[in-house]
Length: 197
Image 1 (cartoon, one colour):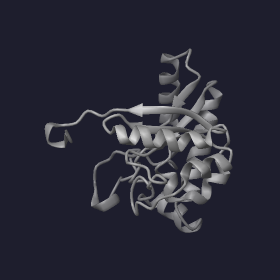
Image 2: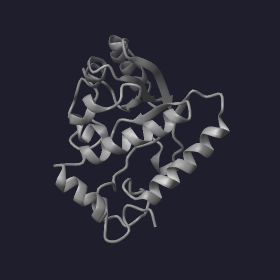
Image 3: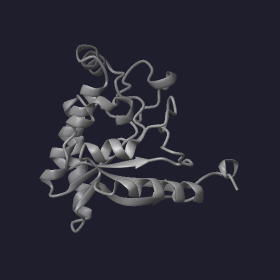
């Protein structure tokens, strides 16, 4: 009942109900309860990763479509969700982490994001001279400089399967250490068909 795709199709014709509608009060109540339960499991942690990674189906329900139309794009919807979630996480005494890839589709909201939010700025590619956008047009952007200049803390997030990614991203990100919060190395379970080596 809280899915963004409650009827019709989502991104690229998908009907899988993976994304919650950020405008439904039922969704907000769910997140209030769920985040509080998760935070309670880690009472000593000062940080809380609130996701926002690859939320392709946002903006497809009638409520969200109306918001997008009235405010000229996805940015308003995404920014309000980030602000509300940040307030929730802060009320639990934690600092919020979120993935940056959805914000990259509406970078105009970056100056409006609360400065205590930490972004996982991920790139799993060779960096020369700048990272490519995670999806879409794959345009290269000096993303660390953008976050750094805006005073937004970021975590340089790499994939350990590619040593060239770890090496080049480390060398690139350390030039912007004013707001470089950490370097994060990820790994992913893959099927045999997906293994690269």
